[in-house]
Image (cartoon, rainbow, N blue to C red; front, side, top):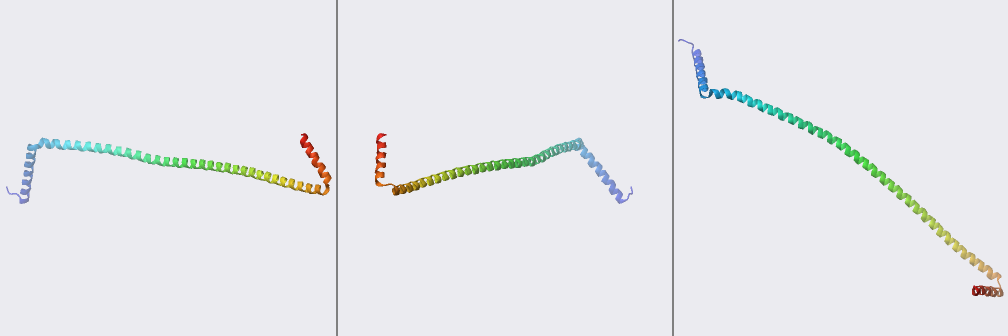
Length: 162
């Protein structure tokens, strides 16, 4: 057979390949044919498992995003409640302050009235003393010694009889 050297080389390569495949089939051919379908089933199972995990992760992500949105709503609610409590506390403090101011006004008014009453009583007492002194001075000027003795005797008689 007179073939071209490259063609001869190619033929031997094909023969070697066929022998190699025959040896592989003889040594573990059935295992080889069951390996690839088994491996494809395993890969398919892993892909299904990964899809399932991805869906679970997406569900968890959606849940976390919802929680974050709920946290924002909760934050707004807490802020609103705090503002409402602050306003209520402010109103209560103002009411207490107004009540205390009114009480202080009343106490000041009562105190001023008492001071005025006390001052009036003092003025009356001072005036009475001055009137008495003036009357006494006037009586001393007009009253004679005999009239004075008569008044004392009349006073003593009234005291003894009563």
